Length: 332
Ligand code: ASP
Image 1 (spheres, rainbow, N blue to C red):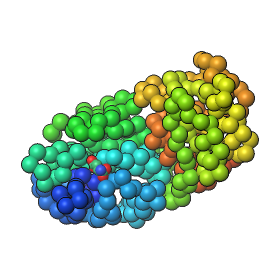
Image 2 (image 1 turned 120 degrees about the horizontal axis):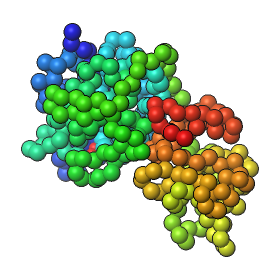
Image 3 (image 1 turned 135 degrees about the horizontal axis):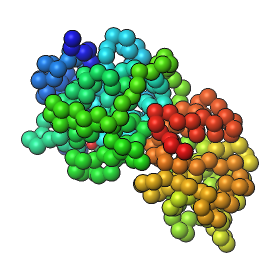
Image 4 (image 1 turned 135 degrees about the vertical axis):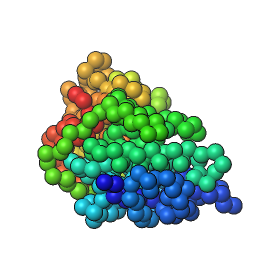
């Protein structure tokens, strides 16, 4: 029996055409589907247009719209495909991994580096692969399908601005390879024992600060006034500068004493943090209530905090949830 799949379009390059102001989304969900007519042989498809934006304009509240739409249609369809711009696609994939937990169905997010109506484009392959993967059966959870790879929603990151091979799986194996009709699955998600749960509250007040030598720690005063949590992209395995006039540690300590959540992550793309190795890490961990990202992607750190802090801002409760693995986002 053919599976029933809902295509939810949100814009991005895949749906863009050239305007006087540059590439801008305008192609509708129905038109997108008309470029890949062969998918009707694989599955039954309905389409809906949720947004039509460049994903640079994505807002955390739009993730809630996606959740609401999928919840509304959850029983009617066997799987969902969201077309999306690539620029913030991994944020959306991470966010949906927290906002839709234990789904027994595939939720696939895809896009492309070139518009679907371009002469040379990756859009048709990515869209067709997404339908194949979603129709496969035994695929559960949020994935990105791009350039022949299926990547877990919590592990994806855009690593190339122009090439077709734009996404990588960070600190975790690729879930599957998709090559025409052949799908090689490396990660098998078991049937969920718990019921699917949709979360529709999000707390966007999270600041991401990337450290660079010479930065003035006073910037944290402003961040502390405006935000409830700050994620610091520090260096290497993770540490906080404390020398001379640029004492970030003291400022971060003050933030934690004021009840703010501080997470130390790393600017290095692969292998994650371990703050127990160097003095610059241990000092921060020992003295203050600070969390570290371990092997999570920055996208997951931020969206996980947005999900957790919609429910609680209490450090111990945040810590417990933050270090609990959801959709294989963290391995401690
Ligand atoms: N700026 C586009 C977007 O993220 C890029 C793309 O889709 O590839 O919407």
